Image (cartoon, rainbow, N blue to C red; front, top):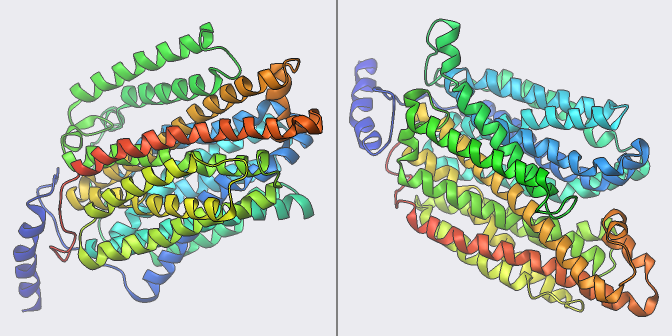
Length: 536
C-alpha cells in the first residue's frame, strides 16, 4: 500500500513541476533528500571547499612579494594569477560534461584531488616554473569544485530550500576574502609563504572525508556514455573543447599583454586576437551543428532564463571583481595604508556581501521568487560603483565605508541567484551544464574585466604621471609598482602623485559601472517563476 501511495504522489506532483522544465530525459523522479547529521556534515564539507577556493584566490596577494624574493622571478608575477585563471575558466564547461556522464561524488572528489595536488606542488615548488605549474593544476581542480558543490546542494536539498544553502556557500566566499589577505600576512611574516598553500591540504582531507562518508547521491549520472571509446569520446565534443580552450587562452593573454608589456599594435597581441576570433567562430559553428554532443547543448542556449542568467552573471562578475581588486590599491597608493591595513579597510564591502548572500537566499526560500532580487542587485551595483568612482584623495571614512557597503549589498544579491534561476528551469540531466555555464560566465566576466581595468589603470596612471615626472622612465614605473613609485619622488610632489593614483584607480570603477548597468537588461529578461511550486 505504501509503494502504491508513493507512486501516486510522483504522478500527481511531477507533471506540475516538470512541465515548464527543459529536459533530455523522458522520466523524472522525486529523490530522497538528505537530512540530519549527514546533511550537516555534507554542508560543512562543501563550505570548506568554497572557503579553500576563495582563500586560494586571495591569500596569494600578500604572499607574492616573498615568492618573487625566493625565486627572483618578478617577471613571472602575472603568470601566478593567469595560470590559475586560465585553467579555471578553460575547464569549467568540460567539468559540466563530466558531471553529466559520471558520478557526482566521483567527479567532485577527482576535482578536489587535483586542487590539493596543485596546492601541494605550489607549497613545495623549488622554482618559479614549478610554482606556475602547480597554480595551473590547482586551477583545473577549482574548475570542477564550485559547480560541483552547487550540484551536490541541488542533489541534497529540495529546490525550495536551495537558495538558503547556496547563500551559505556564497557567504563562505566572502569570509575567505576577508581572512585570506590577513592569513597570508601572518604566514608570510611568521612562518613561510608556502603555508599559504599547505593550509589547503588538511582542509581538503577533511572535506573529502565528509563528502565520501556523508554524501549519498540521490540519482545516478544524468546520461549514460555509449559503448566504445570513439563514441564515448565524441560525447565530450573534443573539437569544441579544443576551440574553446584556445579561445579563452588567447583572449586572456591578449588582454593581459596588450597595453602593458606590448603595444596593442604589436604583432603578437594582434595574432592572439585573430586566433581568438577564429576559435570563437569555430566554436560557435561546432555548437550549432554538433547536435546532442556539443559542449553547450542547444536546448540550453534556447532557454531565455539560462541565457539571461549567464549574461547577468558575466556582467555582475565583471562589475564586482574590479573594486575587490582595486580598492586595496586605492588605500595603499592614495591613502598610504599598508597591505594589512588595506585588507582591513575592504571588510565593509565583504561583510555586506556576506550578509546579502545569506539574506537573499533566505528571502528567495521564504517568498519563492528570485527575479526582484536580480533587479535590486543591478540597481545597487550600478549606484554603488558610481559612488566608488567619486572617491577623492581626502574622502572621509564615512564615504569609503558606506559606498563599499552599498556596492557589497548589490553584489551579494546578484552573485548566487542566477544559479537558482537556472536550476529552476532546467531538469536534472541538463543542470550540470547549466550550472557550469553560470560559473564560467561569472569567472570569465571577472577575469576579463580585471584585465581590462588593469590596462586602463596602467595607461591612465602613466598619462597622469608624465607631466609630474617627465624624466621618469615608463619601465621604472611599471616594474616598481604603484606604492614604490612614491618613494622615488620628492615630498613636494607626493600629493600630485597620489592624486594621479586616485584618478587612475577611480577610472577603473567606470568599467564596473558599465558592467553593472549592462546587468540590468539581463535581469529583466529572466523569467518570473516561483521556486515553491513543487516539492522537488
